[in-house]
Image (cartoon, rainbow, N blue to C red):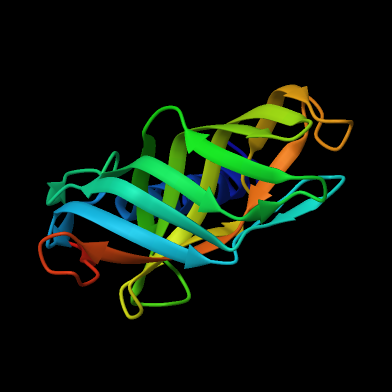
Length: 204
């Protein structure tokens, strides 16, 4: 092997080793063990959460998780919780009231420690499914939401990163159309049924 080729091989090996280290660190951040204290049933409440569509923004007075559950421990962070029932209140769409109902439990996955805040945990909310019905407007929405949980405030914040909720079966006077990307932003203050206080979520 000539010198340039040997030098290239050394550089390539170093790059692969460094890449492997980065991948291992990322994997550790997203698959480590987690604990929730206390675990069990919870509710959550958000004030003035907006739903944003390409053609309009829906302003709601509030959004409530009326039933949800958090697991005590998890080896990977996956499926650490659920949003089992969700309702919105006084959502004006310009031409009438819109009612939102969850058709299946939404799944809460813990992704890893937030890189900017030591007390925050990044989350992914998957298997999102909702149905909207109001005067002159019906539509389904499915996909994934992203956000974080703040141990210092007890809030589950949804929408700080873009999600991929998509509209389908829409009949909404052209305001919501099939394939529209929907954004939800909400800051849900959580309360455990056992204590009335917010949980603490930590990596083990």
